[in-house]
Structure formats: structure tokens, C-alpha cells
Length: 115
Length: 113
Image (cartoon, rainbow over the protein chains, first blue to last red):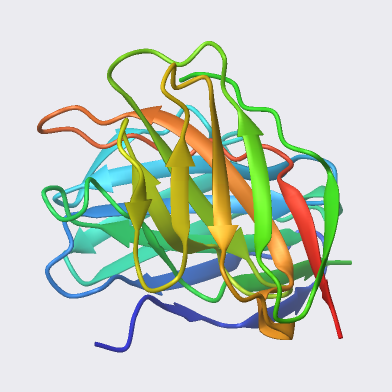
């Protein structure tokens, strides 16, 4: 398996623009997580899905952020409009309940810079 | 989930064992100890986890004290590629549910040539 795939790997955009981050989880995994990492706040969970259904979105910072999982093999995290404080590395992770007590496998991340 | 305390940084000579400590004095009986690491510019990587018994896999060993209030991750023969931030995470694992990983600040391990 190729592991968790994220695209784009790098994104530079201007304030006010819409940004869409994409994630393909490991095939067969039923949980998908979106994390954000900054120097100030470290790694923090934004939202996670189980069987394509959002379970906990309490970490989503505000209404500018939205996430969808239309099917088991694809998820998006959208920021509209983007702001400079959204600059961070965004990680997607997936896991399968029942295998090694929910070991999460992380993607390589998307480095977002909002100017 | 229980709070963990780790030293902010450690050095280790290449080829020697790296012993990374973690305190989790408020751990509950149903909470597991997980270790992840994050090599610079990469996503976090699972290393090992355990409940009460010592565990070993191809990457590392996990030693949990009898009272479960602390643990040590052991990399038996550290290499330069083991330089990373190591996170100790304590969390409940419930049947039929998944919970997020709560990352602290971790320990920056630097393996020196």
C-alpha cells in the first residue's frame, strides 16, 4: 500500500483565496483524521470521520474551515477565505479499528503558506 | 486522557541505546501508552504501544513500570536517522470507537555521530 496520500504537498496562496487540501487514506481504513501543526500550538486535531461520517469537529477553528468525506477513499479540507494565521502543516491520518488498537498512519502533510 | 511529561531534549551517541523517559502519574487502568515520532518535515510515525507489560518490536522496546506511572522507550542501537521528536501519548482505547491522539511537546532526540 502507498500509505496515506496528501495533495498538494506545498501550497502558497494569498489572503482571501480558497484553499482545498486533499487526502486519500489507506485502503480499508475506516477512520480518517485531519491535524494541523504550528510552532505555537503543536499538533492539534481538527476533525475526524468514521465510515465517512464526521464524528468530532470540535477542533475546527471557525466556520472558514470545512471538511468532507464523500467516500471511503477521499477527503477534503477546505479553507475559505484563507488568512495568514492559517499557515501551517496540515496532516491527514487514517486508522482501522481492531488493528493494533487504532494505530494511526500519517500522510506526509501539506505545507500551507497564506500571504 | 492522562497528561504526560517528557524532557524537552536528549542527545545520544550513534550506536548506543537511547532511553527516552515519560511520566504519566495520573494514568488510568484502561489507558494505553503510545509512542510516536516525527522526523523533520515528515508526518508522525507510530513506534510502539503497551498497556502494562513490556513490549518489543522491530523498532524499539517499551518498558512500563509496575505502577504504570512512567515508561521508557528504548532504541537499542540509535542511528542518525533516529533523530526526531518523540511523543509519549496516553489514551483510552474503547471498543468500537476511535479517539484522537493528543500530542504534547515531546522530546527532541539528537543522535550524534
